[in-house]
Image 1 (cartoon, rainbow, N blue to C red):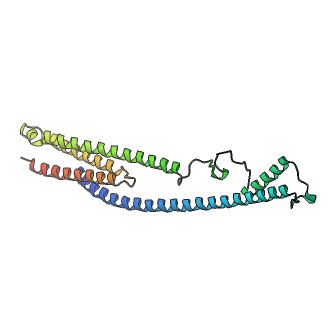
Image 2: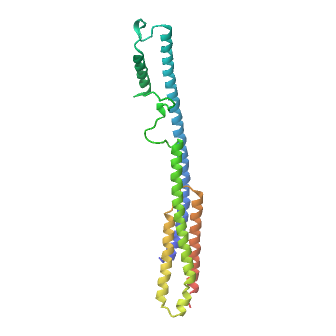
Image 3: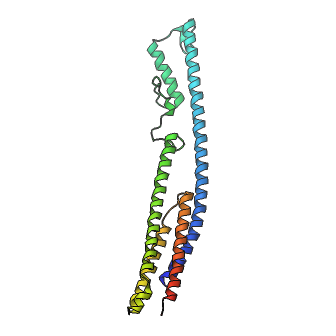
Length: 236
């Protein structure tokens, strides 16, 4: 199959793949949105459970403090005897550990509750996680745009070279027909390589990148059509 025919077939294949990829990206976007909503619901449920647990601890502590101030016997102390303040604090900590299912440290003044601590980095649903994901998406989009800009520049260079190196003067000057055919094959191969490069550019769900990618594909298709017409009228 001649390179120009392969390039045209590749251009149609790229258009079909672009449409299929856009559909995949839309499905992935819907799936990400569903996961984010699901994670947000789980985080809210965990926060409510923690608030209820802390409220229960506070209620128990208040009840014990009131018993001390009125001189009444504590339910877990026979005869109304109380231990030292440090012993009371130890018992309160043990109750907190039991309610949290593990070790517990009281929050520092002005600090965040222990339930808000995360040892594995920011959650995707947190502001920091969203900012990190947004920065990564911007980086990928910037890379894709740079790739397309490079392909566009290469196509413009091929077009300018074709216009400056017309094959008719070569034939008129007695250049062997074999050399002309080799030049034609080289141009066909260059355009085919640009089509392959476009096929490797991901849009990452960005409408601007999708539009630019389609425009470059159309630009190469027009150049292929012009090149075919030029080859036909080039013969003496």
